[in-house]
Amino acid sequence: MMRLPRLRYVAPRTIREAAAALADAGPEGALLAGGTDLLPNMKRRQQVPRILIGLRGVQGLRVRELGEAARLGAGLTLSEMLRDAALCAAYPGLRRAVASISTPPLRNMGTLGGNLCLDTRCNYYNQSLEWRKAIDFCLKKDGTICWVAPASPRCWAVSSSDMAPLMVALGARVTLQSAQGERELAAEALYVDDGIAYLSRRPDEVLTDVVLPPHAGLRCTYLKLRRRGAFDFPVLSVAAALRLDGDHGDAPVREARLVLGAVGSHPVLAAEAGALLVGRPLSEEAIREAAEAAARLAKPLDNTDYALGWRKRMAGPLIAAALRELRGDGPPPHGELARAGVRGRPSGAC
Amino acid sequence: MLTQDRAVQDEPAVRRKCLIGLTVNGEPQEVAFFPEKTLLEVLREDLGLTGTKHGCELGECGACAVLLDGQPVLSCLVLGLECQGREVLTVEGLANGPELHPLQAALADLGGTQCGYCTPGILCVALALLRDNPAPTRAEIAEALSGNLCRCTGYHQILDAVQEAARRMAGGQP
Ligand SMILES: Cc1cc2nc3c(=O)[nH]c(=O)nc-3n(C[C@H](O)[C@H](O)[C@H](O)COP(=O)(O)OP(=O)(O)OC[C@H]3O[C@@H](n4cnc5c(N)ncnc54)[C@H](O)[C@@H]3O)c2cc1C
Ligand code: SF4
Ligand code: FES
Ligand code: FES
Image (tube, rainbow over all chains, first blue to last red; front, side, top):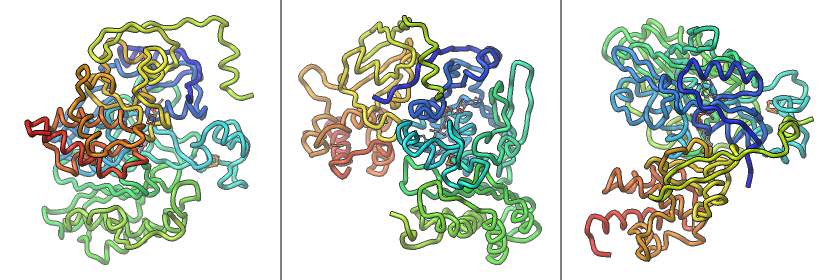
């Protein structure tokens, strides 16, 4: 058996109690939501908190409001979000992202808050203690070197949450609460381009809820590249959110946000590519220009599944596929490789 | 020094177990265990219910799936402590005395189980599926079971068996 390290467990009933318990525990404490990220990491001794503050009894984290916009509590499970037909219809990209996460039993456990705070991932880090000890530990945990970029002073572990890029594309806002008070920030500002300190969340803060923008007139989608149709984290993903100046797909773009996932330690907002689309209809030419501009930001390193060069080459086609879908071409054909407009197997993989 | 070694050193020599009450396969149970134990460990080691299997223990295989308050979850990633007052259903709860559940019978009849290691998890997930959707399509069965790996059967026989069980449960003859 791969056992959890020894721990103490605290079960607060309110957000205030959870924040107080987190402040009390200091660096020894961690919030436990669905546990689907934290517990595997603890079994592999990547994270070794000694006090777990269990959030499942905190009712205040379970709000779910849908009007012109939506407010979602961090404690909602992924399955609860998928079962909410009105929410899924209002934000189809959100439904796509959530449905692509892990597997059905894991989605019954995993939460929105845990997904947004998901630890970054790396082939040299998501390994057993023995494996990491054998090659010697890396910067992210217990070591002094990065095995992916040995000359680098920083960690390049990959932001692998499926909802994070989508929330950044939507321009969602998150609320963080600590014993000192509450603050709200743009989802984009929650993430930091650093594999170790990947969140701007302070260690004593609880993410309480996420507010989505009004859904009327919003077009959003999410495309994810991975080896299997279930289980696997993204090796590349694209989240796109647009508003057009009209109801038809050929109307000019008023606002566009394109975000790349799993190409760096944070979701990468391609602001310039989005700006290139504004004022123009989604013609093939506009799509190609935006896709090229956004794809230039994809600078993955060799620390996930699949060959590095292929992941980088796929960025353009995946962005273009997302924009065509938002133009109204219908969902890309079945199969994630086909979705990206590519036939055949990626070179150097499988 | 590694943090996990320190955690063990600072603990008092005698540690307290915690005691919880829960319902397992319809029977109320009380069980004491250390706080870091997972539901999988509690079921297998403290309650003697070894029908639930341990595979990866990291959420990557589905062998340990059970129903918690009716929903499929991976018992390797649930703290035992978080099951206080809740209802757990494991593979041991499926058969009615000597009579197999239709899902079990169909898996046996149609070759949906070979080494059997994945079977308890698949049974629990399929049970919840047929409860919520008594006549699922093949695609719906495949989606529901997409978190359960099987290294033997090649999956077709498992999908056949769940479809067959649905038919039998709707009143069709075996
Ligand atoms: C086999 C497998 C496959 C997976 N595949 C995917 C995938 O494809 N895509 C994907 O995105 N994820 C994937 N996951 C990860 C995970 O299941 C989901 O991201 C899930 O939503 C995480 O939520 P949780 O509640 O289980 O998080 P937990 O494990 O409980 O927590 C994760 C982190 O967030 C912190 N946290 C939790 N809640 C809060 C809060 N309210 N405020 C502040 N911090 C908080 C925790 O302290 C911890 O550091 C996978 C996991 C497994 C085991
Ligand atoms: S990117 Fe480097 S430092 Fe970060 S987890 Fe991977 S090997 Fe370790
Ligand atoms: S043992 Fe729990 S998922 Fe593999
Ligand atoms: S029967 Fe052997 S793993 Fe499924």
